[in-house]
Image 1 (cartoon, helix red, strand yellow):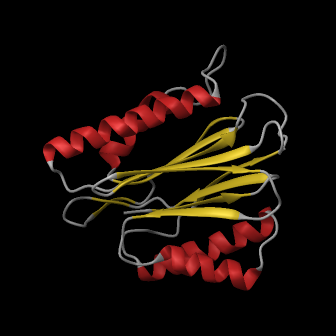
Image 2 (cartoon, rainbow, N blue to C red):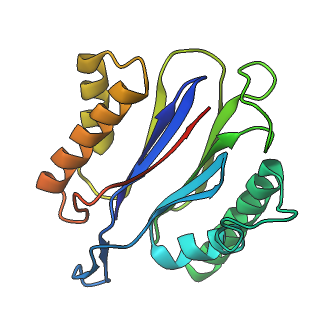
Length: 205
């Protein structure tokens, strides 16, 4: 089901994801499937769960990865993702398909402008579906570390990560990455749906 971790504060954002994909029977079909993407210099998306729905929701955004000229603003990208997540929810309600998907979106509020905790802060939004669509939105304006985890397996990655944060007393990007590294390593030992091949994307002025 994957494990995605994202976190940060007013100074940085970091998003990490492992790369295993399973089929319906639980067999590994890829150990190198990218689930974290830096779309532009201040916008990251990541996903966990049913690949077909995640790819469908993010398709028009991923197609703009590295696009030059006149790309959509970060606000327009977020609106597009939210609209498509709601559309996926409606289709799943119609088909009664058993499905989990999660999308994390991180970036600067205003694309292409200097990061500023007051006027142009980092943000993080989560879209998770597991029978119903849940939407969570956070803006980062202080130095305290906030983070989120996406996973669909029974193993409680979030609990482990929280315990590591408490123990580490993380204050910065280096600390946060160390906590995430330990969480991924622990998960790879206890959760067969994920591996330890982790990719990170980072936003930091």
